[in-house]
Amino acid sequence: MDTIDKITAEIEAFKVNAAADLDNFRLKFLSKKSELQTLLSEIKNVPAEQRKAFGQQVNLLKQKAQAFFDEQKQRIEDAAPATGSLTDPTRPATAVKLGSRHPISIMMDEVCEIFERIGFTTVAGPDIEDDWHIFTALNFPEEHPARDMQDTFFIDQKPDIALRTHTSTLQVRTMEKHQPPIRVICPGRVFRNEAITSRAHCIFHQMEGLYIDENVSFADMKQTLMYFAKQMFGENTRIRLRPSYFPFTEPSAEMDVSCNICGGEGCALCKHTGWVEILGCGMVDPNVLENCGIDSKKYSGFAFGLGIERMTMLKYKTNDIRLYFENDARFLQQFTAAKL
Ligand code: PHE
Image (tube, rainbow, N blue to C red; front, side, top):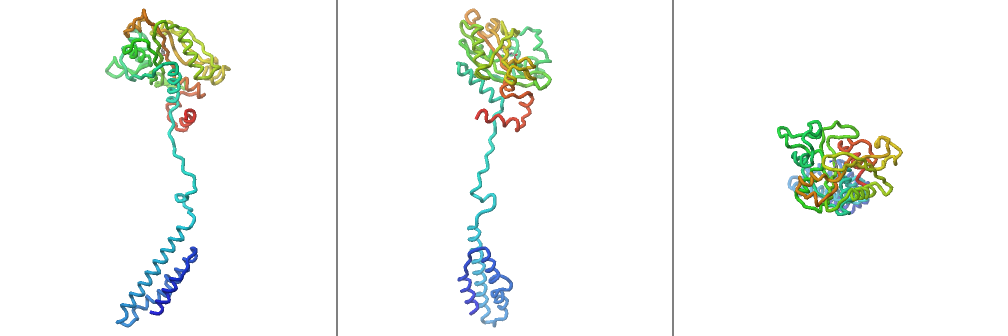
């Protein structure tokens, strides 16, 4: 019993300042060779009438030593500087990975913003359309090649329904619903049955513009498009209009902007001409106005259809349209900064 008292006092007096002290404590009080262990193995030699009381005391002492050890060990560990990656409060936080907007979406927003500044409203319409909105209302003759299966994706068993080949469908939808003055811009996805190359794809994006009012002239169209080109590509940008043909506009033109990649010197994107075509345009044909319920004697206007991929390639100086559809995150993430 004296030894028990002595060990109890020793435990109570024991100072643990560092991990090494803990080791000493374990050797002295908890190891096989410790005095306490000797006491434990002596329980069986104690005379029967004292054995129970003695045994209880020794076991209590053993619990006390173990509890003291556990408590001190915890204290030392808590006080030690953290080394694990999760518990080091001085480490910089892990960056949260933000998604990025697709360059085509960024470009469409930018075009809409530019036109909204001069009073245009953005509207949208369906990707799957009927023959009336894609062709007939837009003055396409019955035998026009664009109606051919080779250019247009028709819906099986429904010859009247197809994926829209251009956003000019929105001209018809807008004029059917609203009387002039009309000023709308219509971004959307379009589909054409074309071989996929670095310059062409079977899915791409267009932005239709429509301006109808009294006394709208070709000069108004030219000014509007010049304003747009300078806002989008910079003050030094030049435009050029070339005569063209569309069934729904008369007269019609195609507009080129000076090549932003080579600065007019000549490169692959501009096919060494210094100019890149970005849109088709023209004065809305009176037949189209009448098809959509608008008085062609009173009103006139212009329309244009911009190719979004072409403009994005020009603006961000990329040379392969397929990059926009492959969804390689390494490509797409580069465009975040431009908008944020
Ligand atoms: N819809 C024509 C195209 O897809 C572009 C265009 C739109 C031309 C409006 C004139 C007016 O090529």
